[in-house]
Image 1 (cartoon, helix red, strand yellow):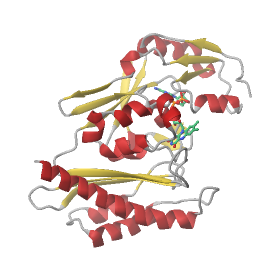
Image 2 (cartoon, rainbow, N blue to C red):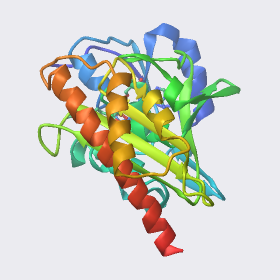
Image 3 (tube, protein in one colour):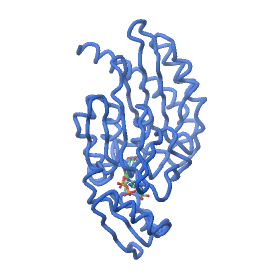
Length: 296
Ligand SMILES: Cc1cc2nc3c(=O)[nH]c(=O)nc-3n(C[C@H](O)[C@H](O)[C@H](O)COP(=O)(O)OP(=O)(O)OC[C@H]3O[C@@H](n4cnc5c(N)ncnc54)[C@H](O)[C@@H]3O)c2cc1C
């Protein structure tokens, strides 16, 4: 099916793009890779009269590392993230999320910004971003503000990003030495598969006692927005990591979710898998810590 008619605009700076979306208001839509937007336009779910393309904005296409701080431009493609050694070595759970998203063609076009703003409950990058405590920088004209990834979503397809704001980049802090994270995605096959469930776990240990001093468990496709499994996190805090504890945390995570039955899987299946995969991903996180200790 052909796309509905629209005016195409190609700003060459973020400032100009901000001006354009203010000027065109409700009639505008931002275009990054187009893998979500163009599908919705073809299906007549969206009919923007003005498309403001971000394709020429080199300033938001870079991954940059300054000291303990990493910034990922919103227009970095999923492939760029999956291929980045700077991301893989410090944020392996995010790297894994990018590697498992869609297919090579989708990863080459789709961007991290589009994956966040599209706000699909099953999107593959938000769980790891939230597990690492990422903050999104939003630009509105001269103004900017930051929103935490675990607070950015309002519902399926809806975020707290205003219509006249542009997601400029995502800011991550290098995790401390005794910390590790992992990502999981469950689908019916390995590629081109929307997640039945997905999620990411992050734990940090007190280097003196070896007990867990920070835990974040983020689950996707189990509720209208990302779920922070706070009762599972509470259970982990102050405890020595291990098999029994991780099994209990997996069980607690089930109680934090509200999955539905749909074409991809039943709520019951999702609940069973949350338990297994949360527990398994906590082990992955612990193994990451062991590997990093062995390297030093
Ligand atoms: C065949 C296929 C398979 C897929 N498989 C997966 C999968 O396995 N996992 C997964 O998570 N997703 C998947 N997707 C969805 C999609 O590819 C991703 O969500 C992708 O990251 C979207 O990025 P984009 O640059 O293409 O976004 P676009 O389509 O360009 O934009 C999406 C939305 O975000 C807005 N937007 C984009 N950038 C910004 C910005 N910087 N600031 C503010 N708003 C912005 C747009 O206005 C639009 O509303 C798939 C899509 C297809 C077509």
